[in-house]
Picture 1 (cartoon, rainbow, N blue to C red):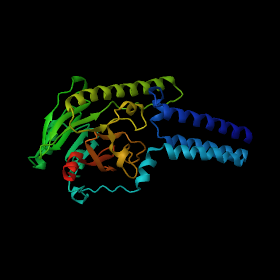
Picture 2: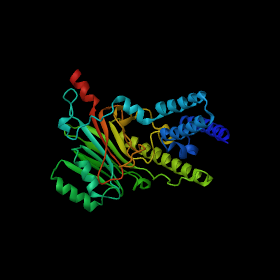
Picture 3: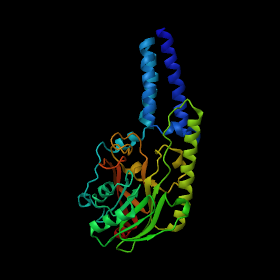
Picture 4: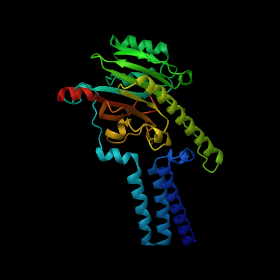
Length: 338
C-alpha cells in the first residue's frame, strides 16, 4: 500500500511540474486560473508530494525531483528577484531622507486601493509626502474636498472619476477618456513647477474571479473570461492614454487585479518599466495587506523617467499594501551632465 501511494504521489508531482512549467511560460487566458497563484505555492504542493513519495518508497533518487521543484520555485518566483536586490526596503517615509540623484528633485508617486472609499486609506498615502497619488476605490467627491481643505496646500490639485482619483502637487489637466472607462480610470496631464509635463493615468481593472473549484470547467471559463476582459480594458485604455501623452513622460498605475505573471502584461509595450519589478527590494506583494501572497498593484513608467526606489508598504485602513515609488526625470540628469 505504501509503495502504491509513493508511486502515485510521484506521478502526480511529475505531471503537475510539467503543467506548471508550461502554464507560466505560455501564460494564456485559458490558464489564468493557474498563474493567478504564485509559482512558489505550486512548488510547495509539488514538494509535499515528493516528500510523501520519498517516505513511502525510500529512494534517494527522488531527491532529484525535490531539487527540480526547488529550482522552479527559486527561478520562477517574483519574490526571489526582488529579494536578490535586498531583503529590506530602503525607501524612507520622508522624501527629505531619500538621497537625491545629481541634486535632482525626487518625484514621489503613491498608489493605494482605498478599500471601499475609506478616507483614512487616502490619508495614509498623503502621509508619505507624495507628489502624485493614485487612488482606487476612491473616497467620494465630498470626502476628497475635505481632504483638499485639510491639506491647506494651494499647489495640490485633485481630479477624479467614479472609482479612480489623482491627487498631485502641480497643475492637473483632466483628460476625457471614453465613457467605457468612467469607473475604471482617471487620466490627467501634470504640469510641474519648472514647466515639465507628465501624463498620468490611474487604473482599476475588473476584479478577479474568486471561485476556486478547479475541478469545474465553468470555473476555468470564468477565470479565462475575466483575464480577457482585463486585458481588453488595459489595451483600450493605453491606446487612448498614448494618444493623449504624445512624446511626454508617462506614469500609470493602480490596482490591475492581476499578478506580474499574468497574461495581461504579456502584451504591454516593452517601453514601459514596472517600478517594483526593476528596483524593488524585499517582498513586493500587495494583496492581501496582512498576508500578501501576490503583487496585483503596479506602477509603470516610460523611458523618460528613472525609477530610484520603490516599496510595498503595509497599511492600516486598506486590504491592499500601498506602493510608494520615487522617480526622477532623465532629461534633468542630461542637462546637468551637459
